[in-house]
Image (cartoon, rainbow, N blue to C red; front, top):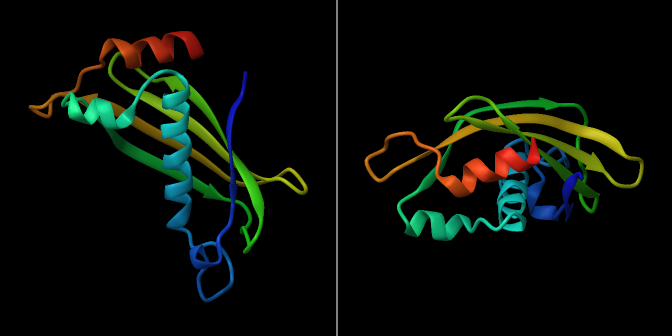
Length: 132
């Protein structure tokens, strides 16, 4: 099953060119990842309180087309297991009115303990076992 989160472009997210500023896409993608985790029983804020921090190691974004003020769109989130300690989220931003792909992204991450050492807690490990 595909996981997706709906959005609508707000005017203040656009730059002088009248398009969504490239940096705003990072926010869209992050929010969608957090919603994905929450839908799988993982509370990002609670993880941080438990001294488990999910961190982004690498982001790759391929901008295809520009979103405009008022555009409705959704972000598709597809989890991928990279290695024993790394996971990835393949994400796609799609404009609703024509189903046009606006952006493709791959965000690679891991989790670290309070000492900053990589490890994969059971609840994260389980999400990637059941969704890959």
